Image (cartoon, rainbow, N blue to C red; front, side):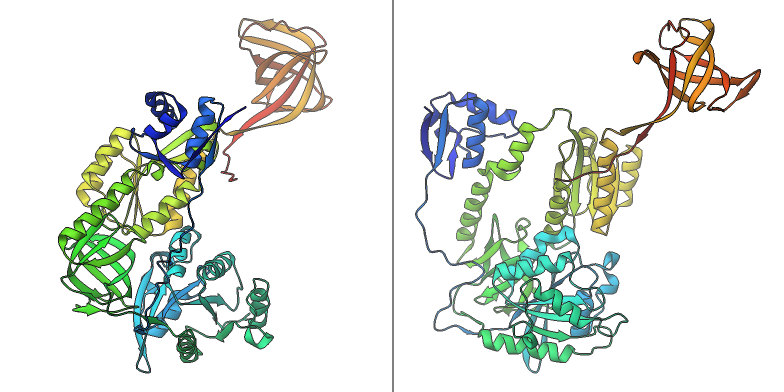
Amino acid sequence: MATTIEVEDTITVGALAERLMIPVTKLITELMKNGIMATVNERIDFDTAQIIIEELGLDIELKEKQAQAQSVPSRHKPTNSDKALSRPPVVAVMGHVDHGKTSLLDAIRDAKVAESEAGGITQHISAYQVEHKGRKITFLDTPGHEAFAAIREHGAQLTDIVILVVAADDGVKPQTIEAIRYAQKAGVKIIVAINKIDKDGADPNRIKQQLAEHNLLVEEWGGDTVVQEVSAKTGKGIPELIDMILLVADVEDLRADMDVPARGLIIEAHVETGRGPVAHALIESGILEQGQFIVAGATYAKVRNLETTLGKSIKQAGPSTPVAITGFKTLPEFADEFMAVKNEKEARSAAEKAAAERRTSVNRGVSSTELLRLINRSNEVQELKVIIKADVQGSLTSVIDSLKALDTDEVSVRIVSSGVGAVTDNDLRLSKTTDARIYGFNVNASSSIRQQAVRDRIDLHLYNVIYELIDDVKAELEQLLTPEIIETDIGTLVVKGIFNTTKTSLICGGEVTKGKLSVPALARATRKKQLLMEVEVTGLKRGPTDVKEVLEGEMCGVSLATPSRLDLQLGDRLECFIRETKQRQLIYK
């Protein structure tokens, strides 16, 4: 009977070895065999521990110790005091790619962002604040392409209201459904903007029917989903849409505490020449001021510059305000929570603690699901090694997630290195030593870097549109797949004469009894349905004349190339066929 051991959801390698009563070196070795570099004091999660025990063949059953339930308020829904004041609504604009999300925002704030977006699709979360009838509204524009699922979910969690943009001539699409799911999961109010109402083929009633199929019943049909028909091109319906946002905000009674340390979330982070790490953040509560110390995950900053997202310098900013912050020691992570602290000592201590916790998380690169796949998949798996550079953390996350999704049991993407910023000499050196391709997304490479890459024959690829980058990687992975072999039978010849035989060739004659013979082709020499040898048809003669093909019922001479001497006899058959290879496409589970 198996011994049962109860452990927490995470446990150090040393403690697990002690509980299993095996040498810690044996446990570390088994972890290393499965791609996990762990020291005695590092922690592994319950699922990983269970898998490793199975790999070791131990008759031990792990049981997860249930942690005591704790009431922890969601970081995205902070608990307000009775002193909380009214704040502007935060509105995420979401929907399927090319349904007009950014164009709608352009019409609201009278800007021209969509025209400058690579490929016409938004590729970052962008935040803007506008004023309408003396009241402020913060808008978030989220990407629509399927590769940006992580950013879209992040956008839904940040917001109070989601504007779901659906093209009147196209209808509900995959990213529309996904946006509905994210909004419902985050518990935020949904307002549907049926866009492109001025286009031929616009059918609002069809859209409303499709929305009903996904549990969004519009008000006129007895539901509670607000729908506004708009045209980002002509401006029709946009004032009414903004009024509806403010009305919903009033009903929701959005408030935030002011007299508390500022806190919020990092929306994007990137590096700027001359300014260093720059983070775009959304303040959730408190007042953030220039000169304050803030902690964001494993890094901290003394706020050197505090700006609006349009680059205007400000001294302070309150709840629901999107800001740009400089002064971070290192780049904060996409989706990190930030909080203001009293001084640099407190900031440094909190950042170091967070960094230590991240270092001890062995599961950084290998989840238990991935570990199972690594253990079970064939040793013949082909890897495409890549180095990823992106302009901001959010984009980097999306690119990495998208490339990991391309993995199959036969081929996989191995990310050798990833980071934010331009392609550097270090990237080239790493590429040369690891034979990895470099992919840059929305980043530049200097002329000297490009020249060095050409000189050292390093694959350097720069893209501004994410699906083009993904398509490139997909094509490279397909090149690594073993080609599909397709054989097509073309005809059969019955041997009626043998004229010349050598160690590697043979000339015979006979009648084509089925189909046709052509050259070049392959043939199986058979005797009473038993395979003698596979040979190559190198020539055909009809009488004294060389021909390319011989049809059924005709007599001909056949020249064959053989891998070794073929003992062919009268009455044997040559079953001719053509063998072709076809590049396979990736098939995902």
